[in-house]
Figure (tube, helix red, strand yellow):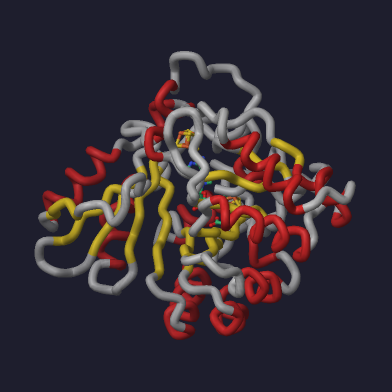
Length: 335
Ligand code: SAM
Ligand code: SF4
Ligand code: SF4
């Protein structure tokens, strides 16, 4: 039975952040000036343990959750993450188990992730040019190592592989074509993401956003595209296929074509707070319930009491009522 919010949206996806730490300092996500040496990352005891995460997942799945995505921070930094995957993979009714990573640790981890039961993977890569990529990840991480990570995921069979590229005007927008050329025909789906105003620290301005229309027009001029019907209602990416048969691309137009009407996602932070919107200001504390000894039935009731009144539609309202809100950071609740 589905759990429906106040706008008629079921709870279908759960994104679980397993750490708020990262080995990158992407300027649009964890800018160095804020996430520096003194940043108060969560101490280990405050993170949900694997057992706590799995207990919550087992309670969420019967409420309608079909898909779980592990994220962060950088999820592969969480020690023994494959043990968590192996535990989650046994949950009956969970159809889709995936993970989003910056790819840096994939050469070492891809096989173990697959063996543990991870089905597929999304790897973030913003440019094929080392100078641009370095300036965006801000830790001089080279492109070739992320490409090696993608190849390792491919060899391990973590299919289908999606590549996420956040497009920021004046920074990497001239890389759209190079990225598309590289991944055309590779079997992997490149997804262009409009730069979003998540958190309070990334200096977002509307001028930095390259719209979905601009992106598709630029690509279509070189390689004609045709739209692909959504696989399911509420699919976040708009999909297009190259008419010449060289595969698909996706566009996540959260700014210029918001999709709150079909938003079925909840996000669990690494310290166990549940957020019903990427732009929420406050989450509901499930760790407190877990650690005070609440029963499964009690926790299930909390899930229902949080989801039922949900009315979030930040992106639909963007610019109207949302300026100046104290939002949480993406590295904390996961993308
Ligand atoms: N560290 C992992 C990674 O980078 O893939 C997982 C966490 S990251 C927060 C998840 C996704 O959010 C990444 O694809 C990242 O590029 C995207 N992201 C982060 N900040 C963003 C922003 N301001 N606008 C759009 N996408 C963003
Ligand atoms: Fe780290 Fe991912 Fe955020 Fe980049 S986007 S800083 S890799 S969490
Ligand atoms: Fe969902 Fe909030 Fe994003 Fe709208 S703004 S799509 S409600 S996460």
